[in-house]
Length: 129
Image (cartoon, rainbow, N blue to C red; front, side):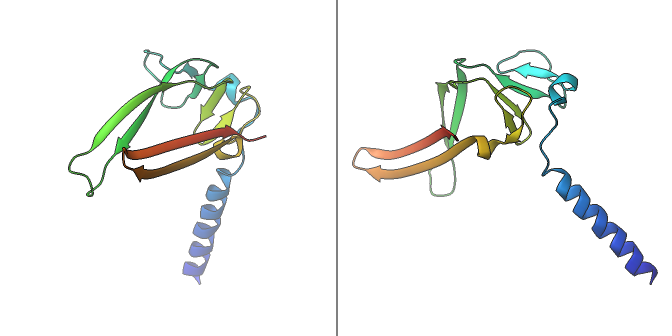
């Protein structure tokens, strides 16, 4: 009987801790969590909000890896967002107050294929309306 109570307590705690990540952060998160701008060269705290201002170029790194290739390869391109973006864990915000899961704010679609000129890899990101 004691084992059943212990198992019930452990399962209850597991369920509640799993559900805690489902709720978006409150609007006060930005008031109590350090905000670090993309590209900052300062020491970054363990927990922070990443701020990417609109029209600010930042590197996007691509990696081709796996046992199908002779060697791994990387490439970096510079991109920018049209709107301000705040990122915290898997949450995103455009104003630092209203947080949603990143994939409810931005639709990310990778694509790829081959033609006679080589491999064509694409990444499409659209704001969800």
